[in-house]
Amino acid sequence: MTTIQEQQRIQTEFQEKMDQDELLNCMRCGFCLPTCPTYIESGYQESHSPRGRIALMKAVVDGLIEPDEDFERSLDLCLGCRACEPVCPSGVNYGHLLEDARDIVNQNKKFSMPVKVVRNAVFKGLFPHQERMRGLTGLIGFYQRSGLQKVARGTGVMKLFPESLATMEKVLPQVPTMKEMKNRPEHLEPIGTKTHKVAFFSGCLMDTMFLETNNATMKLLQLAGCEIVIPKDQACCGALHGHSGEKEDAKALARRNIKAFDDLGVDFIITNAGGCGAFLVDYDHLLKDDTDWKQRAQAFADKIKDISQILVEVGFHEKVNLELPNQIITYQDSCHLRNVMKTASAPRTLLQSIKGVQYQEMQNADRCCGSAGIYNIVESEMSMQLLDSKMVQAKATHATTIVTANPGCLLQMKLGIEREGLSGKMRGVHIVDLLLEATRTDQ
Image 1 (cartoon, helix red, strand yellow):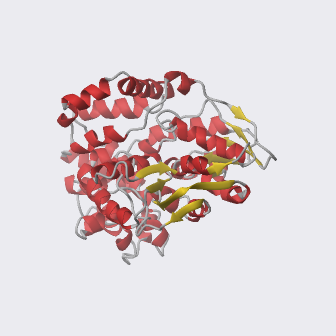
Image 2 (cartoon, rainbow, N blue to C red):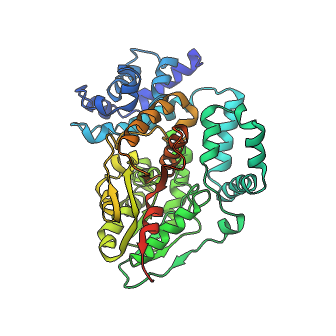
Image 3 (tube, rainbow, N blue to C red):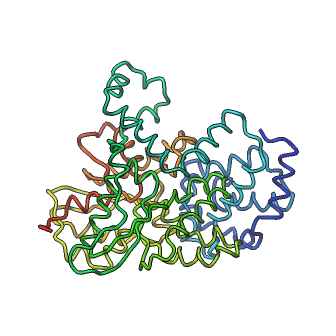
């Protein structure tokens, strides 16, 4: 609960820091309403829509309301999926407003000691330090390989955890060994005729828990004729920090990454995680007030490209024979890949080029699955509500394979498959893993 003093500080900073021109850009037309998952799933509550949240922000700026618990709840329940932005006739940058509002609130409220400890551990102690990410992943690997996982499941220990977390434990990938996580390449030559020189943003979770997906990404890039540079000094993209009201930490990570990718002489910086890519491409906005880094941030953001985009651009699907056993596949959009990076057709082009499969478009594939970073942990009830709705649409396709382009979405869809009792009948897979599985080449 925020105190009166905290509310006063929040209101003052809203007046000083919020982009009032952007707040006024919202015409209250309501075009955003049908696209907002929380508005729909909350029973059409205006305060849980983009238009409603912007109105609340403006009211705090104008001193018409206090930034109380109801106001914070409205911000917290937002997925940050940014589905409202492509349909907005005024081009309101809602995602930027949301991040600024959350940052002001979180920097001016006093958290309970347990919450403060957890936030510090996650935002400052873990994600900025890749060696610690490897250490944590190594512990998960030990849990999986030592027999502890089998014991935990057999004794019913997992029943002590919330249902969503207990189910999530079942769908975690088999993580790599410490040796595999440490033995990472820094440069790879193209296979065949060189098309581009690219840098690969390997990420934090992607280069630990989802290491095999990163390996698959680099193999596809090589087959596409790309020379690949993988800077060893790169860091977490900062998306988790930026979305959770830790903007200064996000800026620090952005500077580290920009420095790591400077002067490599590459054509593009390739990502394979929609959430990371969307935050990286927004570095120019994140550092817009930093005169020393603004231009470097713009140059960095201009080079960001999703793996699916570059594969389509070089005609990978036309040059390489892609084939799989007969099956029905469908695609669940990564919200940030679609809404921020404007990449929706490239993944579908690649999937539809695979011989032997029937591609079935999922209804509302562009609606958030409820993962949204750590949303499925901190807002489990709404997340599972969204996931249940998503699985209705997924099952209607009769697909045996659900393809995604973001690690959080992948885990969420695997969670949905497990919750529906469809394990063994349906699988969730990252698009690059499926493409490599489908690649038929002697190279």
